[in-house]
Each structure stands twice: as C-alpha cells, then as structure tokens.
Image (cartoon, rainbow, N blue to C red; front, side):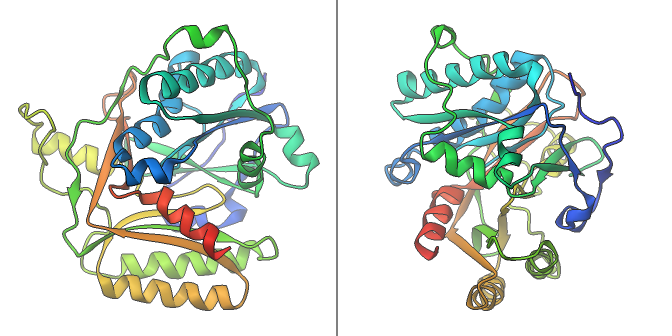
Amino acid sequence: MSEMPSHTQVYRKFASVLDRSNYEPLPDDWIIGMTDVVGSTEAIRRGRYEDVNFLGASIIASVGNAIGSFDFPFSFGGDGATFALPIAHQLKAIGALRQVVALSEQSFNLEMRAGVIPLRDIRMNGRDVSIARYAVSSDATYYMFAGGGVRWAEQQLKSGEFSVGRGDDELRPPNLDGLSCEWNPFESKRGIILSLLVEPMDSTSDLIFSQIARQIIQVFESSDGNASPVPLRVPTRKDGRKSIDEKTWAVVASNSDYRKFDDVLRLTVDCTPQEVEQVEAILRGAVSSSLVRYGLHRQSHAIMTCLVPGGGENSHLHFLDGADGGYARAAAKMRLNG
C-alpha cells in the first residue's frame, strides 16, 4: 500500500500552508472519508452544540484507534470531519464510520452522513487532494487539504453518493479512547469569538485566494492580543475536578487547531469588533469581485474537544469551535450568501 510520503515537509508558519505550491498530492490508491451531522444547525439552536462537536470529532478518534495510529491526514469541521488513508485501511475505516453513525443515531438521536470516496474518483472529476503538514507547536502537527477535492467530496456526500451504508460493524461501539470534552466554554477576552469560513470560487486562482487569506490572517496577527480563543490561564473543568498545572495547560493551549485550511479557510478566533469589521470589509470586496464566498458567526464563547492518543506525551490535539454554533452556523450563512 502507499503510505504517507516520508519526505512530507513540516511547515511552522501558518502562512506557508496558504501557499498551494507547498502541498503534495496524495497517492492515487488512497481514500477520502468524511462525516456530517444532518441538521446540525437546528440541533445547535436547541443547545446541543457539545453533542454535535463531540460527534464531529469522534470519527477521528474511531479511525485512529481502529488502524492503531493517528499519523494520518484529518481535519475537524465542527459538525463532521474529513480524513485520508491508504486504501489498505478502507475496511477498517468503513467499520469505524458505521460505528460512529450508529452511535450518533442510538445515543444522541442525531442523523449522520458518512462516506468513503476513492481519490481516483475525485481526480476523474477534475479535482485533487493534496496535503501540507503544519506544526502548530513543537510537539503537535496536523494536516491541511487543498485541490478542491474535499469540497467536491462533501457535495457528493450530501447528495447521497459514496455512503458507507449499513453493516455488521455498527453492532459494536466505536473505540473513542482518548476523546473527551471536559472543559467549560472559554469566554472571549477581546470581545468576540468569531467562527469564519472563506471558500474560493471555482474560477479563483490559488494565488489570488492565498492573497485574500493572508490579508485576513494579518488582521488577527497584527493586534496586540492573542487570536487563539484558548485562555492562557488554566480554566475550570465541567466536573469540578482539580485542574492541571500551568505548564501542562500551556501545552494544551499551543496544540489547538484554531486555524486551518481544508479547501476552506476555517478560523475560530478571539478578536475585537474592529477586527471583524476589517475582515468583513476585505471579504465584501472579494465577494463583489466574485472571488470568494464566506460565512461568519459571532458568539461569546469557544468550546474545545480534546483528542489525546496514547502516543507521545505532548502529541495531543485540541479541536476548537464556537460555543453558539460556530462553524455549522457560519456554513449556514455561507450557503445563504452563495
């Protein structure tokens, strides 16, 4: 089977993963898997944002535990996730997907779509999936996706294509070891927790979109504040247990995915109202030139879902979203603007 290319470069500046020339194509004999909680926006309106986020991240834990490794490309999207694997792992991936779908329906009463798409099918339809590896800290890395293939696959999944269907796998519960959601929501320190999605139009060149994305990132990086919504001080746990020490919390904070790219620029940032106005001005100009479409949602708090695999001591990742719908509500607004 074609494993992850051993020469995959690790980029330590987020601006580097906005440059398409830094991406490597995945091998032809790989698969793309993804999930999506159906009706997530309505579920969030009913106060079930933590359930939606937990289910969104659960497929990453389930697949990683099924194949015995978390060293594969994946991206958390709030109400779902995307991953890429060599085709040799396809049966285990399908089993993990079916188990999470059953969990969603039986334990949470939420419908979930799940599908596996051969990369060859994506390329036959004029799209691609390439990856870049980003070091969010000295201990943790995660992958970005480019090429339009993830967006295309998501559209196919929502139209009913490539579904994993039912199977005996769903009779067993998924292995979600390492996945937890134990922290109280984090209140904004700068005014707004902003969930932002920015997607290039099909006719927009990689260079032009990269320039727009860099402008947006620069707004949040140029301020005196820290755009990450994760607090510097140790927050409180939901169950009131004694919290972790400051040094351990600093590792947690630095290993958080508050910004990423998977054919769509995704940001969960703590920012000022003025910064939101600046970013919206940039985006309105790009929309008027038919370069992008976008959705954003303002809220007062962020939430974090934690994935702590059994590997390296500090290799855990922490998935961030807005606590009032975040990416799901931003995506709903993007569809209205599209």
